[in-house]
Length: 296
Length: 272
Image (cartoon, rainbow over all chains, first blue to last red; front, side, top):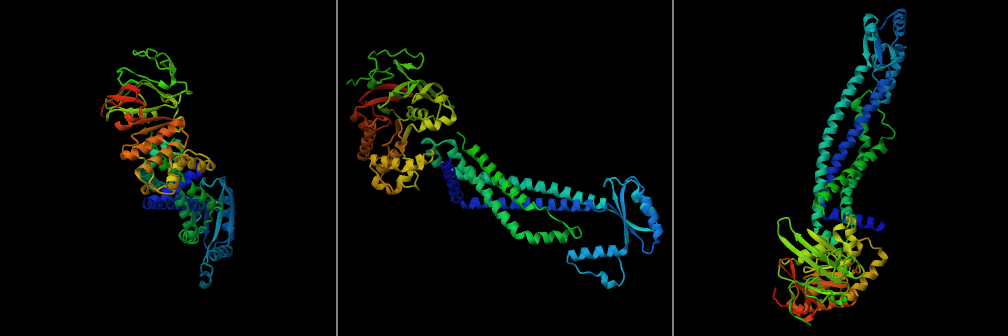
């Protein structure tokens, strides 16, 4: 087994460099595909994190007009809290709201302009948590009906829906593009290995005649395909490691207010996904090639 | 020694002494018996063909009703004009092709019944030598010979002694580190023979091994094959070389239009 592995890996390595141009072309396409794949994984997981963040926050936020008497606010709060769909209603006064806003700005490293205005521009609000984030009942209508008290109602579900549709679109478009690029990679690997098989036609004939088993004849080619995937994965992961900083900053600017926190295991997961896909695709391509061009 | 041809002679396992003197040969086809010899008995028979026919998909009949028994230790010339079926016969023996009818036994195994994974093991019992040597140009003599062991997963510690042994046998110890382009035709063919021998095969099948060599070198190769035969390995050599065949007075099996037309010791009556 040890000799078999040594032999196969050695030949795979030789085979890779024997037709270096083709092998490198295959590896580069593989990298392209794996970068796309990682982009999709990172994007989707970022959006999922954002979604979770938004969903666990208040579901409905009603902004209270400045100068509303406290008893009117209390009445409205009691009325909303009495509804069966509502789990909790919190009142956030202007000072609290300002402090929160300033904290968010500091966290994102942005300048705080609120001190320059001389008065607090942030409205007080009622924050309503629902028992089921998707069941609103007439909560929103009740709030909107309180004219003079409530200036605006922000339904987080709207944001969630928007995020969901972005996620859905990204997933579908990403998968379609990924499938196309994946198929291209597969074709290129098949062709690379086909050339490798042809370049070794004489050796393969001799191997057959001297009684080499099928495994000795086939596996070096499978390994050669997997080598394309392996090198592609290494390059992709190296690129991602270098680009990790700029990417997360870019994402933060893009998404803005929603603080995206990636899962802790995103790194290991990416390594597994990228490495696994590379090896699998390379192995599959060469397997197809070996099946097609090495029959007998 | 008779030099007349017996047209329907099928089998002549002379060395075993089993050969019948009866000219009308043998109805003994039941079971795997020809001339009273058990074809499937791997103890004495290197290879045996029983009623073998081979028709290619394009309808060409390459072999028709071929019966042939080659006992262990035999030296057999396979002669016949181009297209007579010599190459087809060799392809059947190494199971590159399967017979359309009849049975081919090699080392006691019916090749048609071999499982796919058993074929490589069968081929290790056959050392095969070609007219065009089939050496790998990028490898030295030693590496070419070792390649046969390497690709069959032979343990590394056994490789060097085995290669040294066969290189000494074919007289190429001094050229071990040269590549084929640095060798003469004869040396290249001896390298190929060394490679064929390195598995310690039961038989050597040589397909026109002297076809690309001048007469003097051809004799060298033949001497080598005779020596290998004396050491106990069966040799089946397909050839056009009438001079060699006539001079050696070994068993000659002649094929014509896919049939065995002669099987006897010595003599090479026709120019093919």
